[in-house]
Length: 63
Image (cartoon, rainbow, N blue to C red):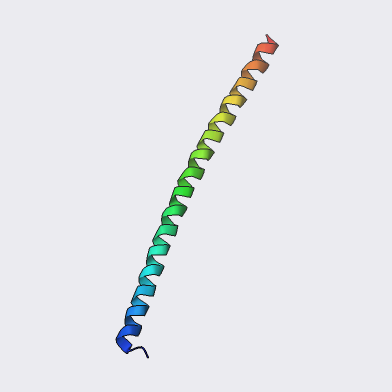
């Protein structure tokens, strides 16, 4: 039979493990958010450059 001290230790360890897992998940989510932001910036820049090139070609064709 477990003593109250044993039960308290088990509960503390469970909470500690839970807190550590949550911290790791938060860090993973932050890294994912940063990667998504970088990908969005790269795609936005690519779209901007393609659009500018299309506009330049359209203007050149009018000349």
